[in-house]
Length: 274
Image 1 (spheres, rainbow, N blue to C red):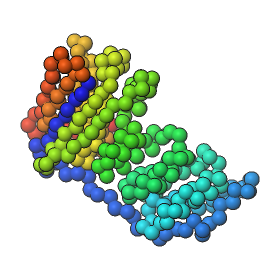
Image 2 (tube, rainbow, N blue to C red):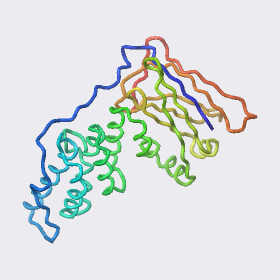
Image 3 (cartoon, rainbow, N blue to C red):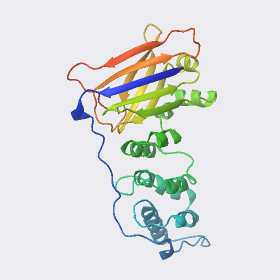
Image 4 (cartoon, one colour):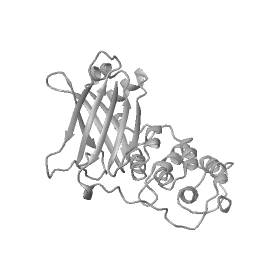
């Protein structure tokens, strides 16, 4: 099923994108300043704490320091991963230990894709808090492409929906096109096996980033057993007053094109859901 979603905001005063986030200045930390010794087998609690502190400092430098050395990222991470138990090292990468956010968040916000890629070599799955922190980073940078690449849709948090998508090998495509006028954009979606999935789990979530917000289109089965659609904003997104047109085209040209308009009542705003 192909869908086209066009949206613009009526209320100009409530649609400003989230404020830009700038790199936090700090002195550069050289990987050469600390030696992680993989040959040591056991450490005292004090030694382990010092090693953990050193590893965090090095990681902080990779995502925050303005003059970090890109070529040192791989060797430094390898050395630090060797110096700590694997679980503890991955915990450091997923803890909100740098200005209230994870290292992954700062790698995204400060536009360091090579560092982000290096971090992912040591991760098999996101923790729940990390998942939301990475989603937030993509939102404040308005990066739908990375949001899609990292598979950050909230459908992953719903077991039945996530399991079905994996078992069917669903590869939905969502493309966002910013409009020529302020607060207007178009989203084109190709949703695979729509009928099968909506019958099986009753709900389908399609999410995308546009205008500095995470928008969602929820398809669900109504009381009359027909599917319906609604718009929502994800957590941390600023309120908006959307006026949108949903156009649905089936792959079989014999079916008619369906259209649905979304418009809030005067004075109402669409607020983010938790």
